[in-house]
Picture 1 (cartoon, one colour):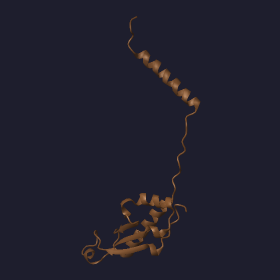
Picture 2 (tube, rainbow, N blue to C red):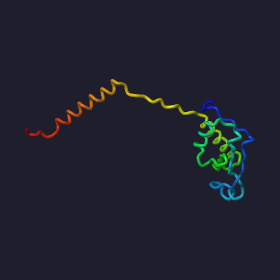
Picture 3 (cartoon, rainbow, N blue to C red):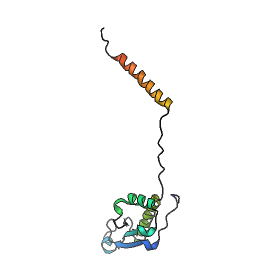
Picture 4 (cartoon, rainbow, N blue to C red):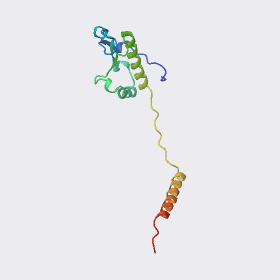
Length: 137
């Protein structure tokens, strides 16, 4: 899966609740539950163990101890817009978890590089020694 493909979420793993939202909307905010709380059961997604571990790290405090990711969307003033926002954010989070980091390959400096470094250290030492006070013999 590439990072540009959106992850498709199975409906049986999702649960939506609409809650009262804060923010713009005037008195309408007190009457209408426009914010959405999207809950996704991670174990129903059937993820590979390494993907699950990365998802757990990426989700952080949004993942509960029973393996449920909770995303609250309250940016928009309509339920549909907030629902789409929450689903998009969840899909993006899961898609990011599918991206594997490249392993770092340890490298060593070559023998020539080590010798060059030592030579430079010696030349710097002689330059600095020449700056010191002259001691009478």
